[in-house]
Image (cartoon, rainbow, N blue to C red; front, side, top):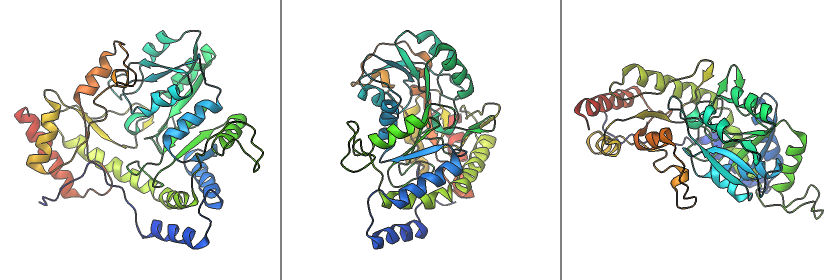
Length: 363
């Protein structure tokens, strides 16, 4: 059995991506242009059932601009999970609005809908669930809840390219949705984000906001940003888009093997009607989770990740005092094991052997 280090994540960039970047370099058209437009069209067709897609230079920019385009600003509240990457709450705060932190459920680590509803006030303008680890949140129920209260629904789909619920792709439920294209995501453009929307006015405002408020050069309609994606990044993304379906199938096969053979820790569950794309394969470890992770590396040369050890509401940047018991449990117990498409059968066997041995030993 190979003892080479098994990383927790492994971006895949091949000859096709390099050739695509070289073609852009040779063209001399490096900034936002035809490659970006083509990437938006293809992303829409492959992952959004034709819904409009707007490319930006990062996932965080996508959330920020999406919220601004949807009219979120000072005095507003948007309900978000605390158990997620900080960009979710940061993007709300950057608009001048207030992120209101809700608890999660522990089956899929997504927002707890009952707790969300209890937090809705006259200041609430939106709810932003996160499709965490690649599992879709209960987005149909959130759409119903948002409509009942007359508020907006936004999707943080940073980790959920190709995930679906009830046969409908994530990113097509909310007033807008954001997909991250960071290197460790299920597909990448090197860096970047894609924002989807079915609202023509939000789409237009997104395109203005990413480009200094301009649709036509020097005719600035509003105060905007430079959040454009380059043709170089789009060229990488276009190639990756042709591969993400196969990579997702391999992630799902790897996850199925792990779930069928791992014992002693709580393995991921999948909701009825949901398609999980396993950006992360996240288990819950009783006892000392950090010691378990250290032993995986030191004794078996296997990497892992803890996403997220400090809930957002306890970060120095927010310093809130909400009582979120499921969030605290998850932050204390979660551990993400390798599930990426580069794993081979020996890698998977070693992961199973290691986890089972450490769980049995109580590490």
